[in-house]
Image 1 (cartoon, rainbow, N blue to C red):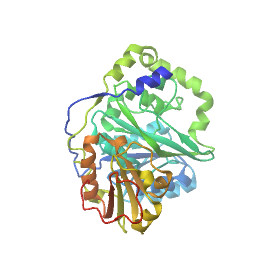
Image 2 (cartoon, rainbow, N blue to C red; image 1 turned 90 degrees about the vertical axis):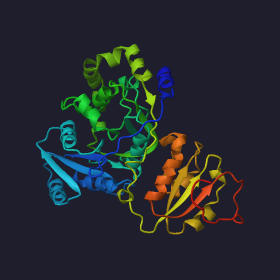
Image 3 (cartoon, helix red, strand yellow; image 1 turned 90 degrees about the horizontal axis):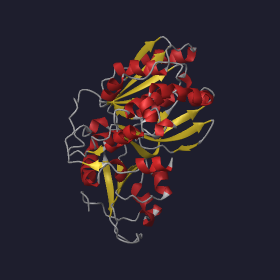
Image 4 (cartoon, rainbow, N blue to C red; image 1 turned 120 degrees about the horizontal axis):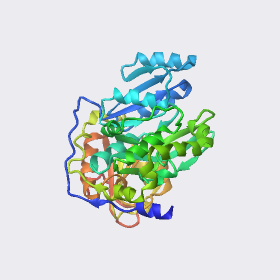
Length: 390
């Protein structure tokens, strides 16, 4: 296992800069598919988490997988009247079939499957889109998982790794991936006896030589309750693994082939990473505006005075953009609406492009750009930054 972790931590070879294909702006960039079977009591929370996303360039497709619960049916009837949500229906056939139905009707370049009892952190879709559009070598992005409900905690997941997949399903079902790759592997398994149809799907995606990256922060809120499929399936893991071994013999038994897949991973940074992310109308609105704290590579976030920041922040939302790979003080994460850790999202050569696009697409009313200037005190000038990186 340690050898596996060493392999997956290797940095892929860097290739030359490429251009991302500009997407048809009349179509959503992302399609979010939400299968629902009798989870009406949770579905509104799921949809609210989508409504609060910082990037709003997506469509929502809810697939009713043969629900019978009256409260769920009533809610779905209301959703049918909403133009912002597409509602599809099928006889109960399981989550794999429901996801496939939704994706067949999807118009986006990227797909996110979100279970109807789970939620997304509000910057998830934006950060996934930035990573996918900034590096064409990345075909899939997912995040750490925060458990809530009957159980709490954080599950730290990893980059997509064909060897590690033999032992554990280390991706959340809500990973964002290319719709084209769903087509290439034939969609999700619709075998209801498999239970972990997403595990099988990730194995087939990995077998394409797909490079998948993890966002190292909790992004999927996984609700633990009496009907959680994870809890229901745990006692059948051995049975599931036998099925997967038969379905993917090469992935399980051919180490040289697995190594060859990973040797083909490449970093392919784009020179125009925001050509599909430059529409201000497709970001969340902030009626009171945004205060931006930009932390340069040499800035010392630990020296920022919370009191000074509170005075400057006022009633505005706080966005933090950080070039540093050092851990930020916990109080910054606690008060910030969004924290963009740029080294996690893109190549350093793309930071300036991100900042320029950010300023064009958000209602920034004030910003504080901090290089390393030593200890910050109340006596220091707190004048508004005069645009651009300083």
